[in-house]
Length: 140
Image (cartoon, rainbow, N blue to C red; front, side, top):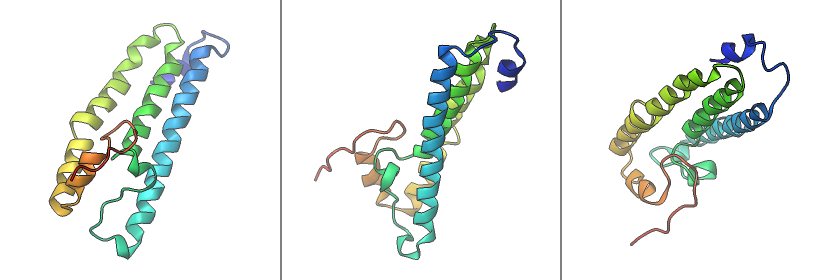
């Protein structure tokens, strides 16, 4: 996908889609990097064994790293979209989105976590699955 944008002779200057694409990519990179770092630090602490990570970005999304990956691919697409015939590269972010939301991403990950951590079901009730949002109030 990126090669399409790199080899295209037009446009020969940056356009607004490039700026939006870079911004979307940057937000995605931050979400993925920070989310992965927070999870690694959480898992490295033996006191957290068997617990659910629900702090930092993980308080707003059950999968902030997947959300970041999603944004990275859509950012690449927006950058490539400014080139002639760049529209067909939408295939790449669509595939990544389907994999994350419907296949091996969220469904498989959550299936495995539910089996090993019963508290994860409460986390599901209060936390957005993908797009970061404010946690819901806990219902007794």
